Length: 169
Image 1 (cartoon, rainbow, N blue to C red):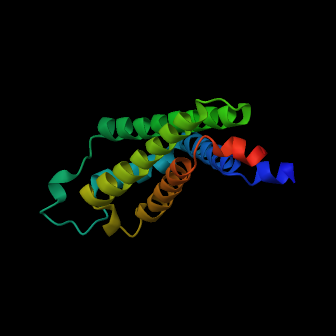
Image 2: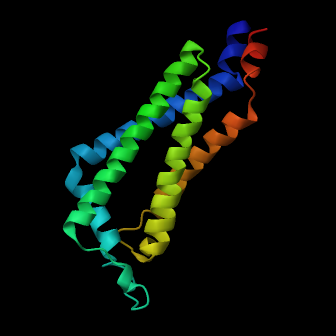
């Protein structure tokens, strides 16, 4: 019973979600590095706004400079990689019972929320009108990633550090 109490504890839930999210973000970054051209094309089309409704009221926002597009994409990949690293170090800290686990998990999920909430939904989805594109619309996956990050943050802040010791008793 003691083992079940630990496995099902809020502490374990946060640790597992931290690990899952860290692995996921690592795979996202790895996929963007190993399949660079496919995902670069996504960023290029979103920034160019070439598959939107082409309203003259928003067309001025388009970014078509290849250097700017590549820089944006490299920054996205770097942000994903650092997010993955923070979350994976946080997961390891949970396993080791380190106090730094909570702030690392929180920082990683905030980074994920910023990338998908601000970067993809607000900037990509609204500023560059990504939602208008049938071919290059990433708002749904971005929203899913934002929800995962927010769920992690809610779970993290809904549990108290004392929950770990309470589950062991």
